Length: 437
Image (cartoon, rainbow, N blue to C red):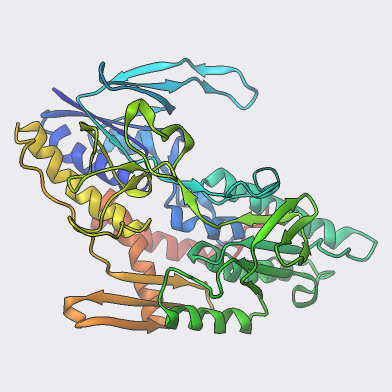
C-alpha cells in the first residue's frame, strides 16, 4: 500500500490523520502513520487556560494511540531529526525517559508521501537571557510548568512571615498577541479564584500584578484597530499593566529590562512574542526554507524542491492564493483548511492522479479573542455577512466556544462531542473552579 507519513499531531496533523484513516486507511488503500514527540494531544489555544489553572488538562487530552486505534491509522512516538529524500525515509531521535535512560532507540521510517505539520515554537529573537529565564506556551509541559511555578509562588506568599518583596507575585507576559492578552485576562481571574480558596493572607488586587509588554504601539498588532481598542479597554478595567512600545532587551532570573531602561522585577516571565518553525527544519535535505525556518510550499502545499513532501500549518510558508504577495497567517483556521485540502490531495495521489492536485486558497473567517469570563471580542468575515462584522459579548463567546467543539467534532464525530459536553457540564458542579495543585 501507499505509505503516508504525517509528522506532527497538532490540530491540523491529527485531524488529517484521523480523516485519512477513516477513508484510505479503513479501505486499505493506504497505510497512514502519524508521528509526534508527545503521547497526547491538547488543542493549542487551550494552553493559556491550563497555564492559568482554569482548565485541568487531564480532561482535555487525547491519547494518540487510542485515536489511532479508533480511526485506522498508526501512531509512533518520537521526534524527527533527519530526512533522506533519495531513500524516502526520515529518522527519529532516541526517546529518553525523564532520567535520561533510552526507552526507544533511533528509528528510520520509510514513506511514499511525507506530510510535515510540525507547528511552530516561540521566537525569542536572540534576546539575552530569554531562552534561560522565560517560559513559552508551546506545549502542555510548558503550560503545566508555568502553573506549578505560579501556584508555588502563591503558596509561599500565603505562608511566609515576612512581607512580600517587590516582584514576588508579579507576572510578566512578553508579547501582546492573542496568546498574551488571553493569558493576562485568564491569570487575573484564576489568581483571584485561587486566593478565594482559603488563601486569606493574599489580597489579589494589592499583591498580584500582571504586566503585558508589547513592542508595537497597540495590543494585537495583527488584528483590526477596533478589536485592539476593545481589548485594551477591558484589560485596563482589570488593572493589567500595559507597556506598549517597549522592546525587551534582557531577561534575568530577577525580571526583564526594556530598551527605554524600564525594569520590572519578576521570576515569572512568559514569552509569547513571535514564532518560528523548529530549527532542525532549516534547509533540511536541501528543501527551501525562509528566515524563520518555515518550509516553502507551492499552491498545492508541496515543498518547492520535492513533490513527494508536503507541509502545512505554522511550519509552512504558503501564499494566501496563487499570485499573491501575502502569506497565510499562523492560525488554527488555516491549518484546518489546509488539512481538508490535503485530504482530497492524498486521495488523488493514492489513485494515481498526483498531477491534478487541488489548489489552496486561504479564506479568512475572522478572529476571536477570548478574555475569559470578562469578555470576548472579534470580527466575522464572509460573503454571507457582506464583509466584516464586529462582535463582542455573549455572541462572540458562543462563537469562540464553538471553535473548540468544531475541532473535537472533526476528531470524534458530533454525537461523541455532544455526550462529552454534557458530561463536562454535569461534572463541573462538583469541581473546584481553578486547579489547586
